[in-house]
Image (cartoon, rainbow, N blue to C red):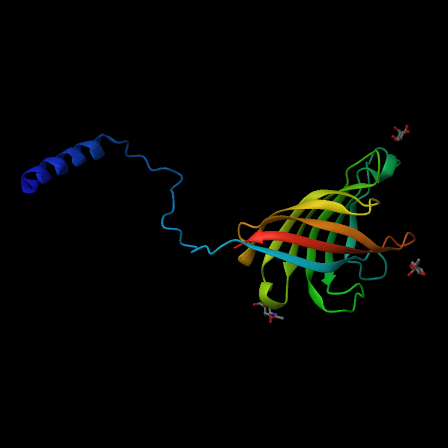
Length: 189
Ligand SMILES: *[C@@H]1O[C@H](CO)[C@@H](O)[C@H](O)[C@H]1NC(C)=O
Ligand SMILES: *[C@@H]1O[C@H](CO)[C@@H](O)[C@H](O)[C@H]1NC(C)=O
Ligand SMILES: *[C@@H]1O[C@H](CO)[C@@H](O)[C@H](O)[C@H]1NC(C)=O
């Protein structure tokens, strides 16, 4: 019976496939999963972020000085800094370098000192050397603890998501130099 039905089934399939549109899709499902995901991990990191604005080698430089038409907007609204800040194991800037925070922040609030931060943590040591985490969020710097989302990552942090808690360890109001403790909580594979 089967040998009689097979040609019939094949001709049916041929008819169906011929009647399908021949254009290719711009997407495809990937099965089986080539990443061979294991169970999702939950990892905590802690390090210190150094925003050095003073001296001859600042790692944080102002690239936009407020509004060109009005330089006295409240709370520095409009100022933008580009950063390549060191991340270290301890509050001392000379302690072990873990990676760098590369990106920018801007003063995005007129009501308080409120930053919009967009930065990548680039790890340069240990297990996560070469992998990155991307943080994008609101940072009202004079609040004790600020929470910002981790919106993704690369390398070992593909598909990462999570959040950071940032708290100021030290701020020099004369120079603007700041040391901020970052507690990072990420889900990744
Ligand atoms: C600049 O902004 C400040 C604060 O918003 C305002 O009081 C002032 O009038 C503005 N100056 C000009 C020239 O528009
Ligand atoms: C991190 O990775 C880079 C590039 O692969 C390599 O040159 C460097 O030696 C690594 N550093 C550490 C501390 O493993
Ligand atoms: C701020 O930095 C200046 C210049 O480096 C230094 O003289 C001063 O002692 C610092 N202030 C504090 C409170 O650390």
